[in-house]
Image 1 (spheres, rainbow, N blue to C red):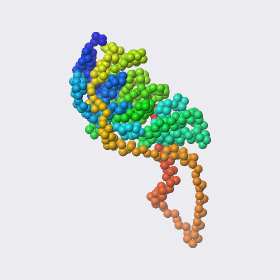
Image 2: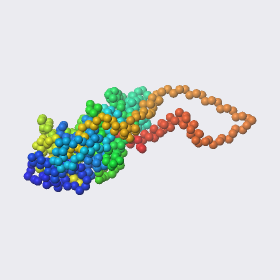
Image 3: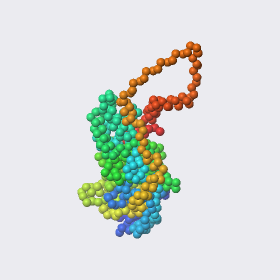
Length: 518
């Protein structure tokens, strides 16, 4: 370490006047803590985004659990992606023990057990939680291309398919709808419309169709459809004023990492469209922890990376903070990493030349400090981290070797009956549990190719009676006329089609994700 007074520097650098999250206390020479040198992050700076990184087993999950607890207590809603099923314990109070008590005393932390208001969610109903689904049209071509593993040409062609569906008022609600549109375009009946699209070839459309069929056969049908989830339901506050912690459990999707990461990005894209600009706020409207962030950037196209970068850059002004959780900063694309003002870096290992290279790259992302970070980052214990955040005036704080406090909630999975009871009692379960299958592109195209029955010849009009003059027309009763008209299935279908067409005024976001105008 350089010959500077690090404790004095940390005390001065983290002495904030407004509300802040307690990240822990400074570790000094010999491994002891200085409880007077608190390491904190201003609540108003949490929406400047952040990174929680470190090797497996170094304490990242407990770090984000502790941060989520404090955010909830401050009235800030939190979203957590729980790919390993480790965070459900937030619904139950933690258990006191020697290790917990010792650590809390070591850092001067007033620890007591507490449970937090939790909602459990599950993609497509796979697992324990309120089912979360998205319509294909709202998911958009860019995100769907990411899941299907399409190349740049195929991604562009899929965009043309969405454009065709938007223009012709064909709602893409589930995968069957998208397959039906592609099959129509590649059929003899749709040959002229395919030619009008220009950039979409029949061969490319066939490749996309095959990928969609394989995707559906792997069980992906459950993730798409209605009732579509409204991501603003992640931004709820409990009656006692604490922020609701929304936990998306994903243990069943560990074998489908791209699907998991892309759905998380859809949540952000959807929020970006829905939320108004709020500028700088005293506390975030929502904090979103993006676990396994490396999955988002791995093999991503340039267009996809650019969309992520722009979303992260702009969503801050809507009051949403994002924390990417991964192993090393190099897992996050440089343009996104540059926007993450708050860093919590747990221990790194340097067993291989690749590890050593990652270690050097990590050190280069921190401000200059009194530490030899290449050495310190390999010596950190479990639950310790190198921290730097943004101060209340937006400047980086001094780098601090920090020992973090234990979570107040249960550091294990909650019992299954408890989780089931929370889901059953959720007011959201009644809204989203039932899957709806209304008329959409599949049914509309099916009607289009169906042969209509021959029309019956009109009946001859009766001749007027010569004895009595024809009665003058009477004014129809509006109510009876409307009832009779709506009883006619032809009129009903025409009105439904018109309403669908009007509702298909599409607003597409950075990712090409779409919403109907409300």
